[in-house]
Image (cartoon, rainbow over all chains, first blue to last red; front, side, top):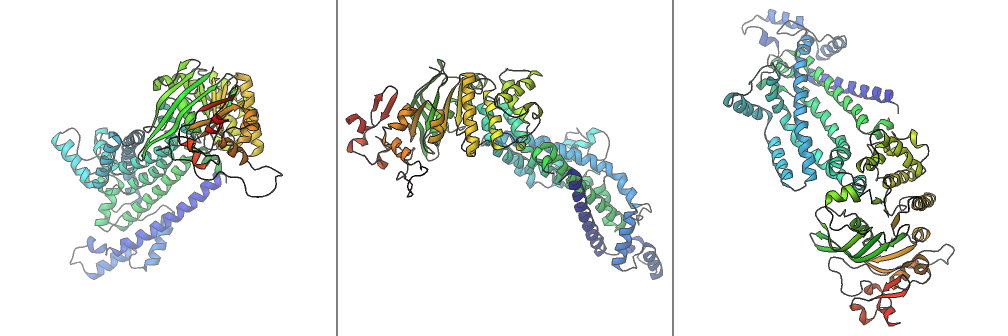
Length: 308
Length: 321
C-alpha cells in the first residue's frame, strides 16, 4: 500500500469517528435539560420561552436539529453561543492555542520523566531506581489530577511562593499546570518504556552489539532505546489526545483559559453550540494526533515505512 | 598458540542452584585453524563461546576457574572496560545463530556495520562509509555502496548473515566464534556461508571456533573437532580421525544418529535417555547412564587417554584397551 492510500484510509476512518462523537455529544447534551430555562427568569411567560426555543431551533424534532447542525458544521458554522451571542467556533478557536500549549508542555514533562526512569529501571532491573520508580509510578496513578493540582498550588505557589498559582502568562505560569497534567501518564509511560527496554535488551541484535564491543552507553541510549520508542509512541498519541480533550480538570483548577474550561462552563449553562463545537473540535484533534502518531511510526521504524 | 583455554569453569547461579554450564574445558586454537565445537543443545557449547568473550548472563553467570589466553594475554582477569575496548569485536568476534534477529531492525546496515569500526577506531568520520563498503564487499554483498541506508528487513536471510559476518570481521579479529551460523538458513545458503567463513579465514588468518550440532557442517569446515557433553569435552581430534575412528561412545552414538541418504528405511538411531542435570552433576563419567558400554568403573571420573597425535578421549573403556 502506498503512502497516499494509507493516509486516505486513515482520514476516512477518522471522519467516521468524528461523526460518531458528534452524534453522541448532540444527544447527551440535550438529555441534560432545557437551556432556555437557564436563560430566562423563572417567571418568564410561556410565549417568551416558546419564542426563544423557536429562535434557537430547539422546537424541531431532534433528528432535524442534528441534521441542521451537521449541515452547518460542514460549512464551519457551529451556531452562536446562547450565552455570549458570538459564534461558538470562534469561542473555541480563541481558547485552543492555550490548550495545545498546555498539552504539549504536559506531554514533554511526562516523557522527560518517563523515558529516563523507564530506561534506568530496565537497565538496573530490581535495583533501587527500579523500586523507587515503581513506587513513584504507583503514587502517580493513585493521585487524581485535581488533587495533584491543588497540592502543587499549595506547596509551590502558596507556601514557597515560587510559581504563580493560576492564569496564563510567562513560562512560569506553565510549569505547575504542566506537571499536574503530565503527572498521571508518567506511570503508564514509565512502565511501557521499562518493559519495552527489557524486551529489547534481551534481543539477539543487542547481544551481537555487545559481543562486538559496543559501549553500554550506546547500547542502551541508542540501539535499544529507538526500538523501545515504538510502543511509547503509540501511547503518546493517545495521551496527547487525551490531554487536549481531557484537560478540563487541570484547566479549571489553574484557571487556564483553554478549551476544557470553556466547555465546562458551557456545560453548566447548557450552552449547546459551545459544547458541541468544543467536543467536536477535541475529537478532530484526537483523530489528528493519532494520525500523526501513525505517520511518526514510519520515522522510527523503517519496516512500517516500507510496508505502506 | 592463538587461543589456549585451560580447565575453564563457568557457573550460572540460578535460583535452583549453581549450574555448572562449562566444567573443566580445555582447548587450543591455532592461527588459521578452525575448531568445531559439537554437541547437543545444553552441552555448554554456546556458554563456552560466551565465556571466551566474558559475556555471560548478567548477574547469574560467572567464570569460576581456569584460564583463557589469547596471544599470550590472560582474559579472565581483564576489567569490563578493557574487554569492551580491546577484546570484544576487536580481537574476538562472534556471529550469532539467527541472522533474522541478529540485526537491529530500526538502524540502517551502514550504521550497524560501521558501529564496531567506530568503536574500535578502525575508521573515523567520513572514512567509516568507505570502510563499511569495503567490508561488505569482502563478504560479497551485492552492490554494497547503494545499500548502506537500507534496513535489515530489505535483505534475505543469507544476505543478512553476510552483513552479520561483515560486522564481525570489520576489525579483523584474531578469533571468530561462529555460533550455529548456518542453522537458521536453508541448505544452499548454508553452503555459501560455509564458503564465506573459509574465505574470511584465508584472507585474515583468523582462528575460528565453529559451534554447531550439525556434524555435516562441522566436517566440511573444521580442521579439528571437540565433542562436548554435559559441560565437558569428551573427545577431541583431527576431523578425519573423529569421523573415521571415533573413540568415545558418545561420539560414536552421535555419528550413528546421523540419518544417511539411501540407507535402508527404519527407525532413526537415537541415544536413549537425557543428559544429566548440570546443577548437581553425577561424579564419574557423565555419559555413563546412557552408555551401552557402561562398567562399574564409570562411577569414577574417566581419565583422558591420548590415542594418537592430537586425538584424545575421556573414557574408561579406552584406558583398559
